[in-house]
Image 1 (spheres, rainbow, N blue to C red):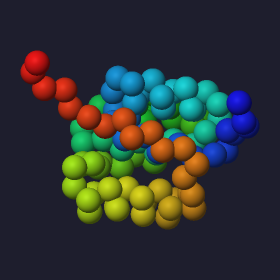
Image 2: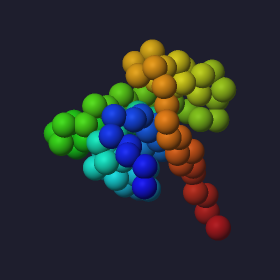
Image 3: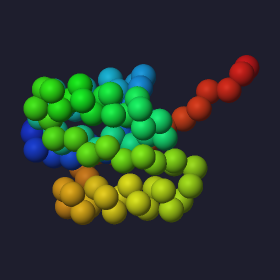
Length: 97
């Protein structure tokens, strides 16, 4: 695996489940993490977990179904870090089957 230390990972749906696990995995490789989620409470909880371990985290409330929200996420990432090296399009909603 390439050296990811200091690189930036953007994770939609980063406030729970697979997104949370991805955030912790990338943080474990020394990456900076951008958490994007519609649920600010759960996103902030993951932010605190990562920050406690020394990871630089940018939390962004984002609804990926709304284009302006996604543009705001991209702009916030570029403003803070200047780049994004990994993008995990993980956000999703499971309905009844």
